[in-house]
Image (cartoon, rainbow, N blue to C red; front, side, top):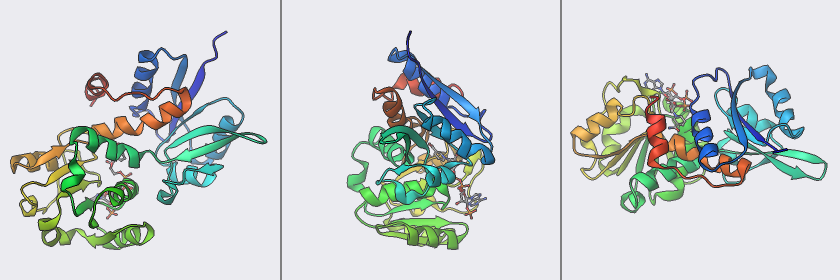
Length: 280
Ligand code: NAP
């Protein structure tokens, strides 16, 4: 009998997740006997659900809104490189002396950098300072990722300035927090702009963001990927700035989980991108 390895994505709600399409594409492509199922889990059911990994039912899975912070608290072992993000999106089995333990990690940090590395190779050579718009969950991963790769400052600008300041204080490595109103003064010596706010979803745009203050060689990227061409990216292109969209981050963040569960490191290919793009 073939042993089918079972993985999941849990959230509340979960039915709009594109992760099953990504992982099932890879299972097919690499001929692996495995499954990846979306499962609706309410907040009060999370701890009980995680016990099903310890019992051996699942090899692991992904965790999405609203469970990422609680998953970070509940795992048995934490990935040291992403522990400081205090939110995990990827869980896997870890053999332990007394049975199976749960290992947690945050792969958004990896996914964000891998997308830029694939779509704009060498991007970091030209970036001294970066601006990150937003100070929510995704901003933590993006700011921490940039702190590893840019030589100067990571400037986090948020509608609620206090939240950006708190994020900067909580994370290591040259991160500063400001209100969004500082954009015009900080833009001229920032060579990378990243949007991590929810603005852009459903075609929404920033009221007053003078992109023309950025250097002409700046790179602009958005982690919002519905629509793929957000108004921010469209405005940046209109000014002749280089842009990278956010779909690749979603695809790349899935790589470490698939490898941990199924033992094959999958590739983010143009074919996979086309499959997911068709659903946007
Ligand atoms: P979140 O924790 O809810 O944070 C939302 C952020 O947006 C906050 O900084 C918030 O500012 C800001 N914001 C919301 N409405 C605003 C407005 N009208 N004007 C100015 N700022 C506003 O959300 P998240 O989990 O970080 O996710 C953010 C976005 O990233 C979502 O669209 C999500 O789908 C996307 N995302 C994409 C990927 C990917 O793989 N590409 C991965 C993760 C997330 P305040 O603090 O002032 O409220």
